[in-house]
Amino acid sequence: MRLTTELSQSLALANKLAGLIQTPQLIELVGDLGGGKTTFTKAFGKALGIEKTITSPTFNIHRSYEYDNGHYLEHFDLYRLNDDEIVLNELKEKLLDKNTVVVVEWAGNFSKILKKDRLIIEFKFIDENKRELVLSATDKKSQAILEQLK
Image 1 (cartoon, one colour):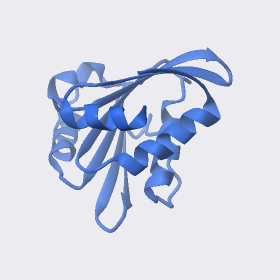
Image 2: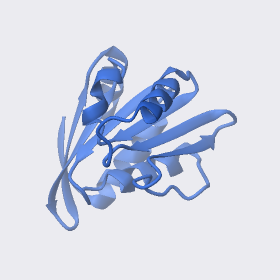
Image 3: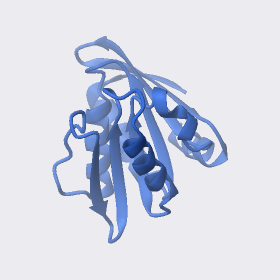
């Protein structure tokens, strides 16, 4: 599924996605620096009901946010990592949690441990206010979500 969208429209997509997500779910965000991945995650988290300010985990690598009494949004940014056993183990642990949505930016070097079923959103920079989003799914659960987003 391809969408060329103003940034405000991609935030509307984040809101719609939040309404369709059921834990556990893995969302992989792909794109260049400044492409809108963290902005999308902020809108997504807010739509889930997270009141805490969502910030980029670029330097912290991982941030956790609780919502809806015991559900979690786990936000990983693996940009600066090639291989890190501690982060790898933490990511594996979060992927097994049935009450969690895991959003991973820059997962390339860690793709070997990602779940088979994931929703992938690729952000392609067009200009300051416009992005092309390419959404794909790797298995049935994520494919069902993608169908509902159309």
